[in-house]
Image: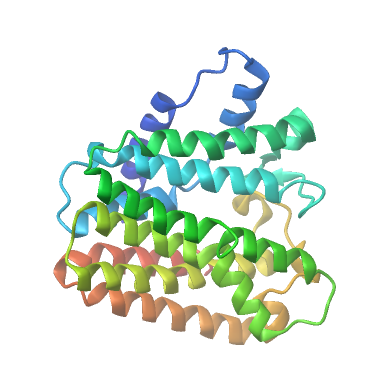
Length: 289
């Protein structure tokens, strides 16, 4: 599994580098900032899930949908740049490196995030699929990243800082900031492949629970992870609503296992083709232990 993920990461990185403006293109400060966070060692989980889901549904060549896969990584990167800003999470480090605003200043960091977001839709137009299929993918994507998704979740995350944790709000934040986007990547992969509706539904649901598990794992790593390996300052989420803060570490670990099993169940419903996603879910859970 590690070898497969590494190969996918390398393929995605190759195309990201191909699609992105070069550092010396005018204005260079903007393009340097865009590339800085994008190529700072991300796992490429979201585009990898889109590609694997596409493959699970017998979609064909990865190259046909690589623009869409790379677009979701641009969107993910834009969200990280903005999340790290002093007005949001105020983080100095991301993936073991100084955050974008620490290197380029807040104004350029904001603009580089905006540019990555807008450029992602330029990339999507280059997807080699029927226009109606691409439009359906865009509809799902925009639901997952806007006010009903990432931005809604980030809003509640900010508003709840330092307040009494609520399990209901906790689930809202985790599902909207993380799970819906990961779910959408799986669903879009199936849609671009024009897969069977039942397979796409299993990808969507499996992706949701995988996203929930992934976020709980991230919360747990903040409590007892290795700062060097995780690549960011740990124990910064003490005032946020996280699963360990609400439920404690032991119960959070149980919930991580529960969501992982649910994800594996939906991926397993697809049959032998879904096994690759089952193994991926297992590997993501094991990164905590």
